[in-house]
Length: 89
Image (cartoon, rainbow, N blue to C red; front, side, top):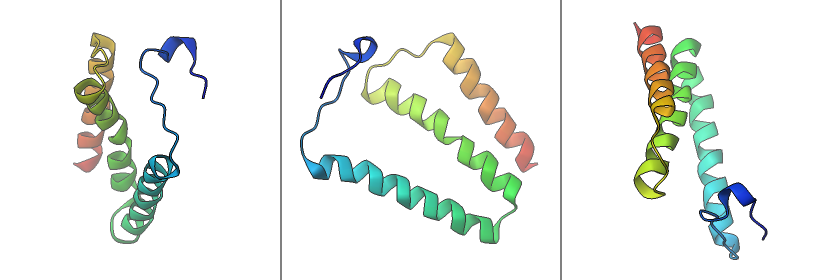
């Protein structure tokens, strides 16, 4: 597997099928949960909460993959979170 130059130091290489199947299963499960949530909650609320996944992705990258938490990312996460809160009200 060839990594791009920008991410060469952080490239995660896996040769096992189970290592690739786990994220795919998690993505499918998350999608099914969102579809199920549309049945019980307002669409605007579900959509807003779904967008918070990008905030969690930034936090996971910072905590576990030692990615930089720049001011630009923090502002973006704050705006997404504020948007979700405003839609909920």
